[in-house]
Image 1: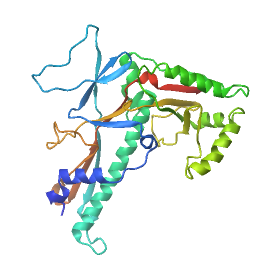
Image 2 (image 1 turned 120 degrees about the vertical axis):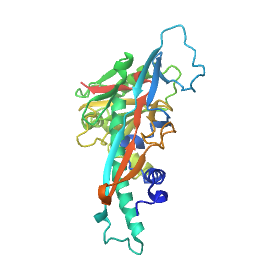
Image 3 (image 1 turned 90 degrees about the horizontal axis):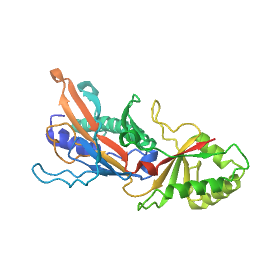
Image 4 (image 1 turned 90 degrees about the vertical axis):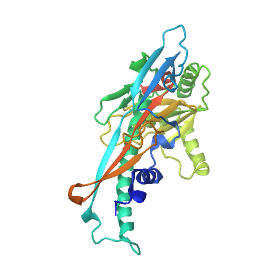
Length: 328
């Protein structure tokens, strides 16, 4: 049954995996990252006065962009390739038929189940990589660095200390001073707000600090009327939406350190996720898709090998606008 190109070819399986429901992940649900789909397996990034700019590709033989008098700081980043493999064996669908359906339908259901499992693994990996990008280092599953954006362009990340162990600390003033300092770096970028992704230790110390606890309790009381399903470890104060980050994946090397938080300005096109096309004959030099899937017959006709992949690279386009909050 899997011999049908119309149902199980590269195009059909790729369409199928992209149509499957998206698994909620904490960073993606914040809507920070915008997607761009490339035709190349790399992305050229240029730093101009602290802003990372993607260089426009052009047809071979045509003129490129003019080079200004100053030296250009350009880096080429290879877009990671994330493959997932699975198998649908002949025995998996032997004597199995969907209720009221046909054998072809039962095979399709088995394939969709495998695609859903593969897509889930890829989506969790994207969450891991997006968190790494927000921390300044996109990490592979084994913890090795794929991209360290600060090292690549010789930038530094600001850290602001919150003395939350001191009951007399004017926390509201510290928050105001932090936002003011970060807004001075915007230089034309419009920030519509700020989000702080917090470790449990940081947000716990913050919301129960004597200067903040009464404000937090009033916020929570009001939240009952605003949103019944609001995150129980989330609140907003002085222009920052503080959220406990619980989206970590077991075994993930990307993590917010205990007692710390990431301060993120909310701004369009500040957080980008670039996708490269798959390494298949039908997809070379085509515009990328988020996910791909294909199948190949097993030896002796014992079933089919399923292959799924995604090729994403998340980047923060102005790294100096993202900072770290740290408890003293």
